[in-house]
Image (cartoon, rainbow, N blue to C red):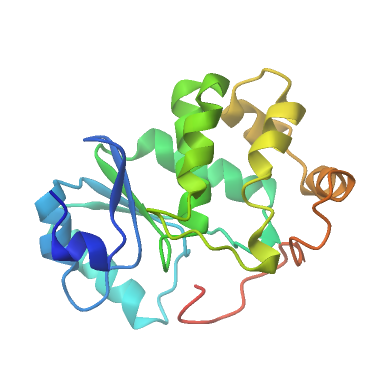
Length: 206
């Protein structure tokens, strides 16, 4: 049964007892929230941000709760570098289960990462299950103009990988310039701001 914290933090299981997704746990309830769901590790998609209070709080609570904290950086409006995706798959592979994936709102970057995890876990036959992670309901994925490349990325990855395991392709073959060309050729021009360059400091984005 979903509790008030689950609704507040947009919490959902991706794979029950194995992997979950949520928004940033503000309001000082992160510790009880992690304990309630038995979370063993937290994958933070907003990157390491020691200058922001939310990150310092998150790290502190994870240390107190014996939860492994892993920082990965994704940007919902810019196409990722290869290393950004490689770091995400590395996190999937080393995170103790069950793990929690979260960004700020748990809607866009988290939908993207959850979808990639399902394909990483189940292979390309999990495409439909992965695509469902972008649902408006219950996940509240209402992408803005420059976030609309996230969902088509799955089709690009399937085409470009040509049957190879997703993580292998992401680690040694993925090219953001090729993704850009594919998006433009498939009617998705204007769905992204460009290829990632560097994070812009913002307590909401990062």
